[in-house]
Length: 126
Image (cartoon, rainbow, N blue to C red; front, side, top):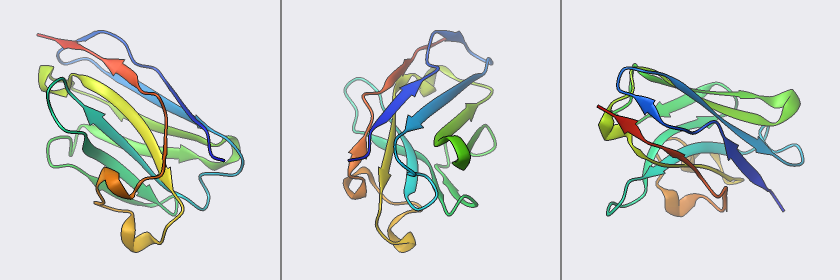
């Protein structure tokens, strides 16, 4: 059973930065597809960034050039560095993982991900 725990959320002003972390259990990240998703009030959950094989990445158009996904395999930690935050980035951010093939990793929707954290809130004020 994979367990994921997010941290690092919090209130930030527009233009600011935050780094989210996702701690996993049991040799997760070296062989799993890892992703960050977000859900704003009244909206569907959407993909933000995914990582496959520690090197291949996908970013939603809305965050390209501002967000960076990375992982620390030795310590099973997934990161999301978020820069130049905007009020539109306000959401609950979730870490997720699945053990399926790489073809179902990058740009895949939340329905492909089996393991989820409880989320961390990121409110961005203008």
